[in-house]
Length: 247
Length: 216
Image (tube, rainbow over all chains, first blue to last red; front, side, top):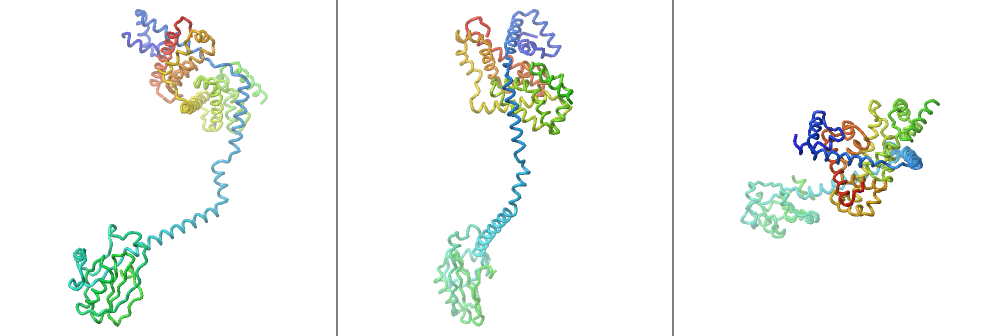
């Protein structure tokens, strides 16, 4: 082994922390290397210096105080109720606590249900409109409505098309039952502009309604959704009809 | 029973004189058994038997009497709480050492948060104050020397300090130190080697700054 290797082993060698084989190699090296022998001597001095780090003679008063404080802490610990005891203590208030929590849950659930339910009513509906493009003025998105398959019923809207909250909260416009005389295509249904003003739509559609048909328009809280109900004049008009009912 | 009390009193007296607790193993086992059954007097006797050793180890690890006292109190509280978990087949002294090292480490960390532990280089800078000729003279005084060694130990990492204190100051075997610290023997040897080299370097620098041949 060379000096560098021996130097690395010396901190362990001086206290006998090197395996016997290596220790023998270090011993052999030290016999012939004055520099490494000097290093060993320095390390031994340093270790002697470190060993002089002995604790002071602690007074008996310190130990008496230590024992007293340990006893006090133990007494305090044993007096302190355990977690289970604390839970048991809390359980006395259990019925009141449980009732309060249950009440809160019920109220919260009800509030959420009503809010969600209202939104559903506003967002699901059926639009039945006369299909006559000649009579009814075509709104900008009428073509899109036609492309929806020309079906008479459409379920709207997609999430991005939903009216804003303020619009949903707006109370629905009063039902406007109108008996309009329609000259042609008495029972046909035409896509109508979602954004079309109510008066315009009513007038235009009214002109196209058959004379024996009763036309009822219901404006929902959403400004672009209107339910138009066509029924034979003899039939009794429903007093009210929501989108959900129509569906 | 009176014989046992006399035996314990004798052991306590021996410990007060600084003698080891190894001889006291048979009655210690009985004391532990009784303490586990809730006998406060038995626990008190255990405390009496080990208080000096715990204080000394804590002092060496923390370098401060007040903190060592706080550490010793915490050690015995943990012993009390966890005595039921102690396996009588294992060495009680070793178990106690482990708790002591853990408590001192926790306290050292708390202290470390309060005041930044000096790095080796920073400490070397401050060494100039201690190494002035007047102070070198004063360093001959034991307390001053203790303070210097405490500073030297403070430059070590937490693990190096624990390893060197247990191995070189408490005189435990490397295997036992490794077991207590939960490390391999190789790791502990490496930590001890590094710690001894750093202590030597610190001492060399101190001597050099003193500009005299006075042994620190």
